[in-house]
Image (cartoon, rainbow, N blue to C red; front, side, top):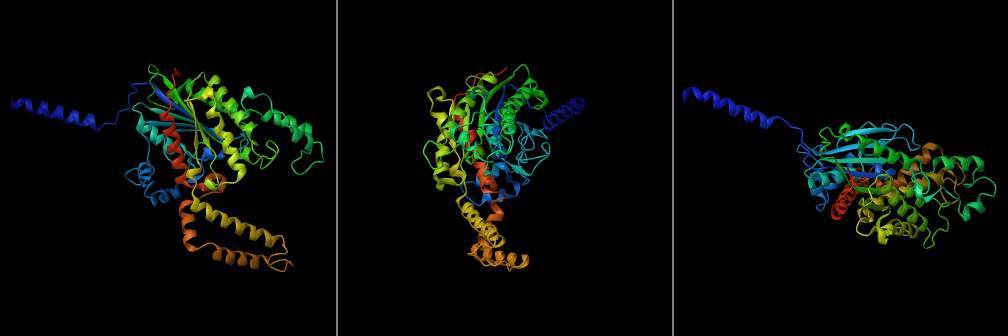
Length: 423
């Protein structure tokens, strides 16, 4: 018995050692694959420095706790991996960022493989999915800034880009004010651009799924993967295109967008051999619940595909306007007044202090600074610095807004019937 003690002690030590040794997660079910696509807001322009603002609100403080690890740094998901294709807005300098999901997979611009210090909706989306599934999760994200659905992401089933009646009439006039200098050259470029980013998106998804182990080290080919959902967040470039969508202020102005988006869903499902792929449409929410008429009309067009009978229970529109920060938005409107004042002084506007052009650059800047300090309180300036990091069309670069969007997209997909496509 005395001689047996070292044996048992050694066994206990080995068991303890084994328990403390990291082990690659075992894939006991198909890898869950989610695709996230769109333009600059899917890229995500919320800087990590705005995270603290999330904790100021008792309603979102628990979400911030999930976004940070015990050390206070952004959490790193144990079971979620990223493949992120992005690059310059013109499609050049494309590259793939990969790794376990954490903060930093937001907008990266010309450095697609480098942590950009920002988040989009992917961060909290992945955190929710990590908690929801025991099996590993793969997020495939493709996003570029400044992209339209009518051209760049135009789905193949929509056919070629065709000038509408307004454009055909306008473009017969003299160049300028949006009229191309060389129509033949413009039309040729339009043809080359049409569907280009849709093609890059599909190509990248296929490439990743051809060898998931390249991105997810523990991928088990015997278990395979399941295409579990798609999230679309885009729209601002279509919203502001007065040529593709003329008749400002009129109901139904953006109906064509809704038709294109419905075809986009059909074509994505067809091209990925996933006929029942669950789909979330992130409805454009800039300017929040007090948005103007055109934005409201655009939101209707974005949400419309979810109401089509063919998409019932498998396509859902998630409104993002409720996640817009009204407090930060009010400050942003004041910043716009400051920008206008600077413009008026530089243009010698007759209703402002530099009407006769007598002010030096230093005097103009002093005037603008005084105007800004009187318009924006020190408390508002501090709140802006704490919670915002970009312009209104990027949801003010608010990590609180993007975190809430990502959570809402994940929750919506989890409520939909799961897909059955995969390999």
